[in-house]
Image 1 (spheres, rainbow over the protein chains, first blue to last red):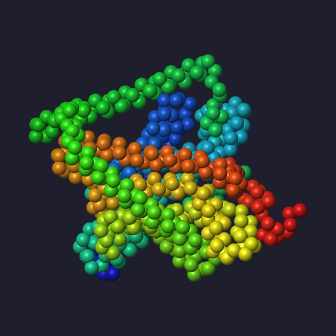
Image 2: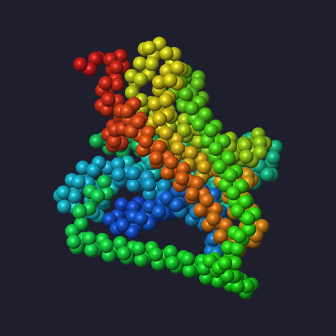
Length: 215
Length: 308
């Protein structure tokens, strides 16, 4: 146990970087995901096609490959803003189609009659989306969206393998230093992850109960 | 749904939408062309050496070497081997987890729930490192064990949801004809739940196949390590982009094939499962309360008062 207590500053630094990655990539993926979801349901065929192809390609690419690209190939293409930023970019791109899919399924989950009613009183595409469909879709979307962010929290660990010093990186470093207490070290790192994932899960459950739309 | 969002376009709107579509195609195509040209442009590195662009033949000539293809093939095979072994274990574990989670005995149910929560909230990568260091297995078995425990937990949860969504009459009928609770679960509930959840399970197996690439980090010679990392180290970084594109193409082919298979199976079992359990076929926006969807499924015993 003393290996954990001695190296607590390392763990806390790792935890801070994990949270940093989570927040940065989370916001980035949310923005990119909204753009892709809008393209996916837009009336313009070429945008729809582009968004579909993007979603299919990124969703079927392993995260390790995406981060490998960011950590090794982007610097090779003379773009190197530091490994933390590169990992954040990779996680953003990787997470965005999942966000877009969650949003799209939320929009599709809104009852067709709602959109039909909005259309029949003469609202335009933009008005229908922003006044009728979106306010309902957002509520249905929040729980799956939180699930995406829980997955993102776990995915930040992959960045630890590509030169970012976050929790997984901290675990690797400390287990190298103190090979005799591997079990305690890994369990405490797991506890940090569970702290984030379980609390996000609890929030998701609470929100789900609170905003559930009765229909 | 999306067709409701906007009017059936009139002549003006058709023209506008077509113009926008063409503009969109041009913008996207221009972006792609720019990307291709930018990657193809020769570049000067800091020490003054000029490197030919990406599409230059000198960046691709390694692919005439049979050994390169053999390495790539071996990498893909070890990825598939790990995925196959882990998938089998994940399915077995998933069944066990779902039984434990839905057990009537509190001493089985509560520990299983805790283990499941723990496993689902932890990164697979950390689990791989954990198993590698604590049990000092090889990197192959570390990867297999972590992948099967994690995906087993998720499959188990899906199966439990499938069992829970069955009409209660199924279990009661099984018990009523004198089957033991375990036999009821195995022979009545489980086959229906499995069939109903098959699309989710296969989707999870695609995730598993993708996640085998995490074993790159613990040093297993899978597609990413042997096909991208080792080959780039061996042939020099000027081939790194070519190797990346090829490895990406291999991954996409494998995953898209499996996803396509998932969709085919989902379509085929969707109708069949609908015959067995009517609420599976109900549209998702309807509530799945059994008494609403399938009044006949609720026996008099479980409903309390007879419904008629």
